[in-house]
Length: 566
Image 1 (cartoon, rainbow, N blue to C red):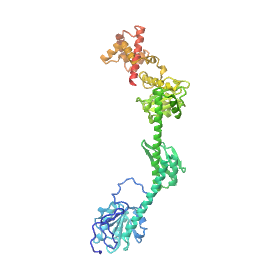
Image 2: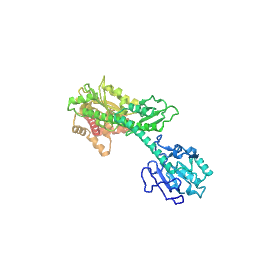
Image 3: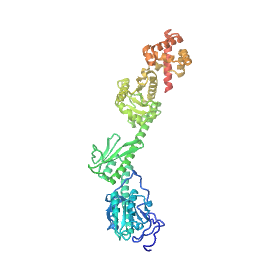
Image 4: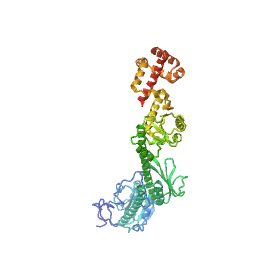
C-alpha cells in the first residue's frame, strides 16, 4: 500500500468495542475518511446547553495537557490559545472534505490536509464550521500536502479562539491516538475510583445510622473545608471545621426529600477560593445522604406520632380493655395517666373539617402545638388532626380558665383567627377519658349551633342541654313535633323561617333588637314574624307550662341539629 492508493471510505477504531472495519493507519499514508477513537464509548451527540454535569479534576484531558504528551513532542499551539483548556473527548482523523457530518463535539481533529491539497482556502473555510460543532481543536501536519499553515487560517482560529496545533512532519497519528486515548481512560478510571471512595465513605455513614454531625465530620475530612447542614429556616443542625456561617458558603446544595425542601448543605472556604470539582462531588454525595437522614427522621417522627395517636384514640374512644397494658404503653410515651384530666377540642377557621384522633396529621400539630403548649400546661397530652387539636389537660386551678387561655394563645398568634374551644368534664380515672371526650365533642357541635364559630364552652355549662342530651333522639323529636308542629308546618308550606326566628328570639332572651341583628333582618320583619308565631302557637306566654315546653322543644331541635352535624 502506497501513498498514491485511494483511501477507504471510513475506518472506525472504538476505544472499548472493536469494529469490523478497524485497521491500523500509518501517519505517512493517506488516512481513511474518518478514524474515530472515542474516549470511553462511541461518540454521542454533544450535551445540550445547560445540561447538568459534574466535572471532576483530572477526569478530562485538555488540549493544553495533551500537548505535553510524548507523542505530541514538537507540536506547537500556533493559534486559538484561549480555547486550549477545552477537553478532548475523542481523537478523529480527517481525510475527506465533508468531515463535518462525522463530528459530534469534543474531537481533536488530526489531518495531513490531503483531501484539500488542491484548495488552499478549504481549511480556513472549515474552521468556523468545526468551531460551531464544538470541536476541541485542529491538528494539522505540515508536510508534502501543506508545506505551511496559511496566514488566513491562523487569523480565523485566533479570532474564534479555536485551537490550531501545528504537527511536525514526523508525528505518528497512531501514537497520538493511542497515547491520548490511554491518558483519558486512565484519568477517568482515577476519577471513578475517587468518586467511588467518596460514595462508600458517605454510604457507610448512612448505613451505620450516622447523624448529621458524623456526616459533616466526613465532609470536612474529604474536602478539607468547613461544612454545615442547615434546616429550612437557616438554623445550623450540625457543623464541622467552624464554618463562618455569617457569610454565604462557597458552595451550597439544597437538601430535598419526599416532603419537599429540607434545608441545605454548604462548604465554606477562604474568601476568593472556589471549591474544586472533587470537593463539589463530595458535597453532592453529602447532600444526598443528608436528604436520606432527613427522610428517615421524618419517617420516624410520623411512625411515633401514629403510635401515639393510636393509643390516644383508644383512650378517648372506649374504655381500655387492659388497664395494666394501657398504663405500660402510656408510661413508654412519658404520659402520666394517674392525674385527673379533661378532654378539650380546639379548632380554628383554617382547620374546620371534622376529624378524629386517629386522623392525626403532623402538619396540624406542628403548626398549632407551639402556640398552645404553655397554655395547655406542662403535663398536657396533645395531638393534631385535620380538624385541629385534641388535648387531655390537667384542669389546674380552673378548667374554664385553661380553656380561655388556649383560646387567647391562638387568637394572639393570628389576630382575627376564629377559634373554638370545647371541654368535657374532668375525670379522675383514665378509663373515663372516653366519656369526657364524648362530652367535648357534643359541646363542640352544640356550641357551633348556639355560638357560631368563635367561642369557649364547657360541658358543665351546657345547662338544659345536658338534661336533654340524656334523652334518646326519638324522644327529642317527639318533643319538638308536639310543641312546634304548627310552626314547622308553616315553614314547610311557605318556605319560611319561623322556627329559626323563635330559636334566635329565645337565645337572645327575647331581645328584639339583638334577634333582628342575629337574623340579619329588619326590626319590623322580626315583629311580623313574632306575630305569626303568636297566632300559630296561641301566644308564647299563654301558659307557663306551654312556654316551658316550647323553649325545651327549641333547644331539643338545636341539639338534634348539632348531633346530625357530627
